[in-house]
Length: 226
Image (cartoon, rainbow, N blue to C red; front, side, top):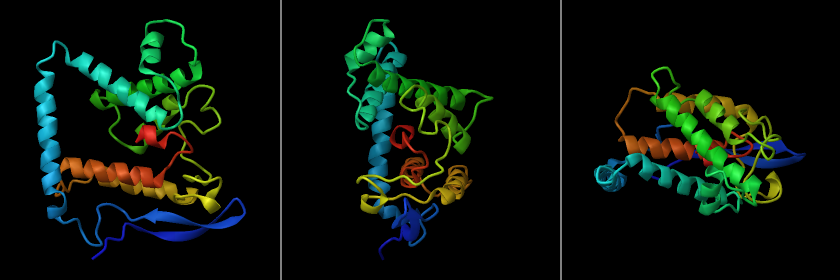
């Protein structure tokens, strides 16, 4: 049986009628996930994480390992959205040296600031867990600066967005209408904190990530927040 991951609804956006996608709530139920479909891959992923954890104990400082890895991730993720900064630019900026493409470097450093904010919150006894409020706060950090000022930093979108194309009518993908986003995020948050642990953590994480990107709750920066 082919799984129904959601359905299309008709909505009006920018004076044209379009089909927007409404994802089904998690966990998948039509049908439920078959353990045979993820068990082998999940085991491989868990073994890889175990090897990485073991390797971190072989370096002089695991913090330096994370330092390099997160900056590379920040750079690659930001480049997907068009920034032209290089890893050397990031190191130069952090060293206090002059860089030429200041705006691009700012976007990558905002990503790093947002990452640190979330990391500190989740590791603090008084910090926020993974929740909509945490994502909104991180989004505000991510879009701080000139480029993000007009893109509702820290706020869930109130207008229709789309992926690909020049408007919703010729887009490759149209996310849910803005009036549905709040309820979809609420359902996602409930799944994240649900007591049912029948699915392995990495599978749950993958589902949450995919659902978040499907909802596309912000006007900009969804990929980087994801």
